[in-house]
Image (tube, rainbow, N blue to C red; front, side, top):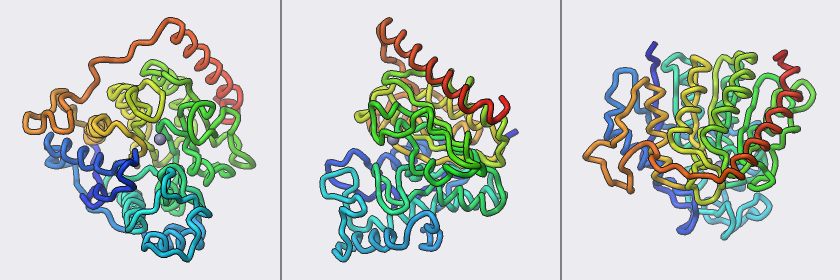
Length: 374
Ligand SMILES: [Zn+2]
């Protein structure tokens, strides 16, 4: 059955610059939009391009503290009433202060809340906010390029309406902020598959972090070894992620679709291709009829545009030609959607990957599966 989908986007979301040399470049959203537009993605009857709205201050609570929200607002205007370092902002670190950052963060957060509202109201079955997925933001501080935690705001909205939400995070980095929000509740299932914290920021997300109290077993972490490729991801999806989602039986699935596990991503060490990523997204999208999708990391800008274009194709039930439309071809170095030259790994590395993944999967199964009667 064809589902109705919305792509939440405005060019304003792609205009701000965190810092000239910063790896997070919002212009990748414009690349994605232009590529989708070249395919005619917004002309289909079941596909809508929707303008985002800003989040209200009240929607940021209770997750974010009043003090932190005021600090972001103040620092964003170039004022110095608040100490930047107390909230993890710094000139040369991950979270620089830039003029207008409060409004930018409110807009990408509002876009995720709007996506959740559209799903709840029955306007669409699927809503994708590529500017969202800022999963590291913590209640009282910025972290990992993230100011406000839009997935939490959007999921909180759905939970407030009595819905069960499963959050699946396939970004290369552990979805620590979202996990933190729901660590002690069974109302929201969080699953994060990421490069192991032994090798990558933020260092958390080990297998034995499985929630606490009534949330025991409702936080699931699948850390991967560097160079983990399409085959490893596919195995984790079929053997761990899908069975848990199936047992949890969510009303809505919320997915963070970070594209930084990409094999050429400049800041991570994983081995996923665009087609491997898209296969994961296809599986997740089939796991539930209602689907809230966020963007996330991704620092190879062309790969982000290609992958999220393929993903939105899945959402509206269209398979794009692998050769990008003539009028777009070559823009931002993009010729085809999928990757035709995949990285090769040595036999030794292949064995190491297999061992690491089998041991991770065995531990997850031992710790979490019994809680869900799997
Ligand atoms: Zn990431």
